[in-house]
Image 1 (tube, helix red, strand yellow):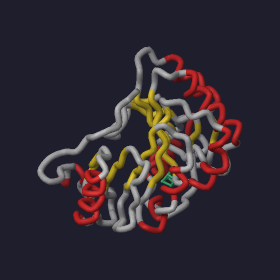
Image 2 (tube, helix red, strand yellow):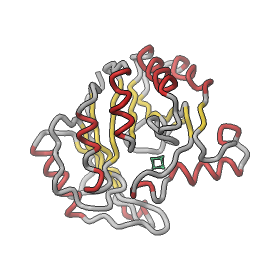
Image 3 (cartoon, helix red, strand yellow):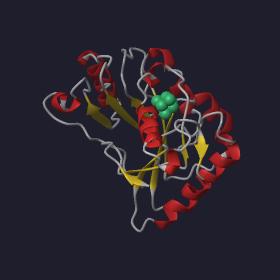
Image 4 (cartoon, protein in one colour):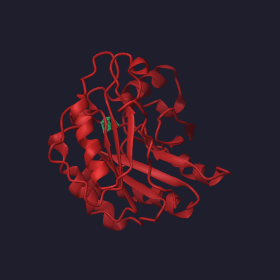
Length: 236
Ligand code: SF4
């Protein structure tokens, strides 16, 4: 477990680390760069760099947190990666089921695997499930998400690298939008953001604007319409 700088969560929990790229949103994967840096720094958890690695000992971690936490699961991996055995995914879910005092946010780009295994999983109220939607090409991930029994279904439109004119927000409970940052970020148009914002407002869906991104993401900030949007679903 680690405190997180990610604006929409409190901390991260990584029972697995490592991944492989699957779509355009992965191009400048933050987890890859950080994993390789930690491998160079000889951090044991990252001894395999960005190769998918299971960390059994992490399954005990959430039981030790003394106060309720909002937790981003697998910020350094994708829980539905094909190299993660289904029984390990079930064990991760079991931990979440047994610690209802915490709220868990899972985010995937592997909607096909999610669909394959979702019927085997116990979707207690404290599990929020999200898919990344960086552009129109991966919009069908949202249909897969809708088929799960997750109590809270959310979208992370980050890095938003194209418009989403056909975005359907039916049965979606939360939307996060953010631009790419780094050395050569792909720019995000304000009109793309406003289009998503208007659709959220029309359906009363909480909208979280994470950042404009760019080469200097601090300078670009996170104001939209002159204010911040940090809306979230209610934690039950
Ligand atoms: S799915 Fe996520 S963790 Fe995996 S390579 Fe893509 S951005 Fe990185």
